[in-house]
Image (cartoon, rainbow, N blue to C red; front, side):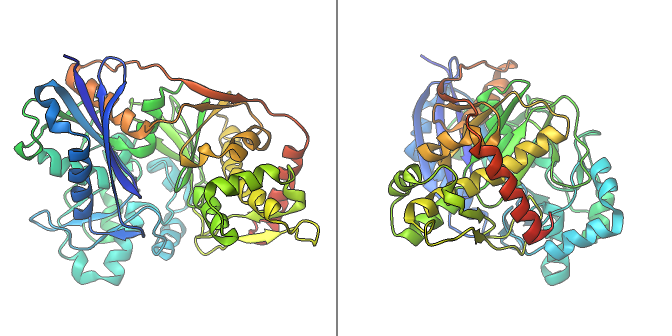
Length: 467
């Protein structure tokens, strides 16, 4: 009988559970349950979604064949608990920007260079510390009840094994942890939150967080340390030096693996830890695949029909240009920004060009991230294009010209959950498995329209927002 690992991906939108053959990474079963829309949620909803997806995936049927389980989840979310591990306030998610004033004040008080050198990040509203500062200022009665603070994947570790634990990758996205010294920075919590709550133990990527409690029906399975979603995706993909992952999901992310941490006082490149003991230089964009969803809604077409329209449009959308900051933005740090549509003429105002402009707007935003990675001295040999938005043919075909590097599209898979499953095997056996990655399509940069489009986009962004 095959030995099995269970990988969990608790994202902004849903919880996915995979059972995987530990030897080759083959998916045996899966389940999924939706999370509510929005930027604020009761974390107990994540537990219920996990239970539903767990049943759908028939995890308990595997019984003693399951070596281990590991959970990856959306980063940064503030989960504030009382003495009994009950939430004192709904979790504020990574894409909640209400703490923009607090993040700006943090940078003003200490300076971006200090933040980049000590925490390897410069505060933006996504990070947990800024949300705690907001809670202390706006809801001091709730803040006074906080005894423990953790992240979404840490919350699931607590539900799965009763273990108050985290890992380097997720801890490095809080603003109060140094992935270089592998230690918390309690002075930042004291200064900006007014107290130092109990914080989860930071486990090595190969370390076990304990055994699962009886509720989950796996009497012999261990729980892996878990990880942030992007670190888990990198682990699932098995990225190599020079590989840059561009993920087009609810959010957009650009990340790679590095042996040394980047120090970027601009705050654009976050020096997160990865799930192997190295670093995960990363840029994140709030607006990504949802831009195409919004365009489809405006045009009253399905996403498939939007893709057909975009393929029929001019390569450069006939001069139509979208700055895609519909929900504010994290990179660049523009929490109050809104989208801007430029280059309109009677000739260009067609459904095809608007659809094309929405696709190019997403890619231009991601291309800014790839360019910043290059400018930081990190090699970019190829891009691995993943995420739900990467299913778009128009986006795939335009990616290499706009990003300016060769693009490979791995076969669609739940790479976050696969990375978690791989980590579960590591925790259970002491060895990190190697699973083969299958590439579906390859594209090379071609034509002059891509660089020309990038130039116009950069000019428009500078003129509109000064960045």
